[in-house]
Image 1 (cartoon, rainbow, N blue to C red):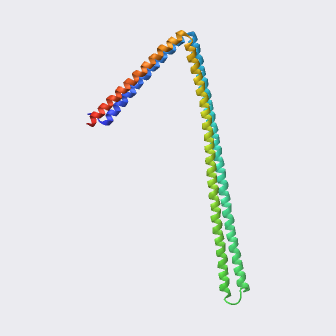
Image 2 (cartoon, rainbow, N blue to C red):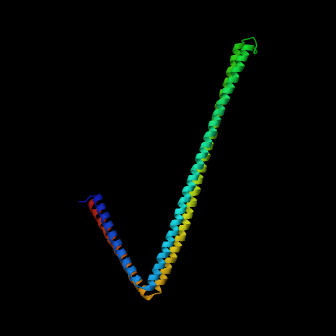
Image 3 (cartoon, rainbow, N blue to C red):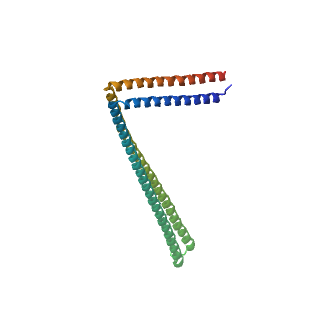
Length: 252
């Protein structure tokens, strides 16, 4: 007995074959229809106009879509370049702030050292335990310099983070705006194309209906297409029904 997988795979192969036969039959009907209409001068002229209109609508849509793609790529590249420049500027500002903070720290420590050495030499703090008091004052000054440096570093990094976040958000907004604009342009072009196709189809149907011979040809081949479609659905239903029966048998 076939397995579940084998039954499904066999049905899929059968469906693909049935669809292939349907498509081949439909192509042949359409070929015969086109050949028949080509033998009718009025119909041939109408079909030619229809074909030209479809090609024109398709070409215009393709051109609009291609231009929208180019414009989008340009906008994305500009957004990426702006983001990179903003990131470079942010890093540069952060680096300069780091240099400034370090220079301030060194200057403050050097000043504290000078005050310390001058106090030791001059004995300006007084005679009672003067060296100890000078040392403590020096440690306080150095500690204050270190604290100021740490606070400056934290503040500088926070500014850098805020800049980076703002840069990223601006980049995302630019991308979303560019992509939305591109989608809108393509949607508008597609609407124009669809309207042109509808107009061409309506004109073709009207032209063919106005010619008795062409109208008869169209009716005959449309009936064949409808019969072919019904045959295709019947064949597919039979394949699916057989698969369901086989699966039920395999499960019992």
